[in-house]
Length: 291
Image (tube, rainbow, N blue to C red):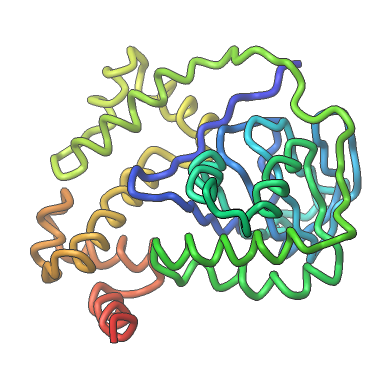
């Protein structure tokens, strides 16, 4: 079975994508993606498949996967029989490793970080001593703004690069495999949403864009991105609202109507669901950070 070419739903403005998983079970198909991935397991355990290898994973462990490396976390049998209780909690960070490598290219002191990134082609489990140091840094990432995330990732990678007990998971690394999935369709949807998020967008309109029925499109989008289409649209709109608040000092109403909302109540609800804050609290945090 060929691994699934998975599309990470990253915004254009995001160099670093941070996702907090709180699920019944981890994403099931073995898959790969263009982004480098760092994952901290907060809850759950089972088997980790990386290319040609299988190891056990447990709460507290941290893993690195280089771009296009097939992998999947699979819950243990006990966790699958959890009667709806969530047993898959993790923080995962995604970024374009070529961007990081290029930004460090002329810095001799960054040699160890570049070597670490290149070594992640085999999959890496971080040693216990380093886990204790960087777990708090990873857990603080969701609260940081975009540039702070970039700086934090460099700090985290620097800490890991000093680990002399790294556990390389696979001997094979990235196998030769063919991308059989129809990625152009999902890219077309992503580009359309990023360009037209400020307008009214219907499910039928986007389904027609890729010549699917709405039902088939919803299944396709969830399979490719592990997000519902409606959630992705909300995240794009709120990400742009955050940008307008932080960069152009828009007020709440201006953000609401500039990002495709015609209802302040919905805007507030969606803003808090994505950021964990109200627009006013977000603005206050921006002002505190700038001072």
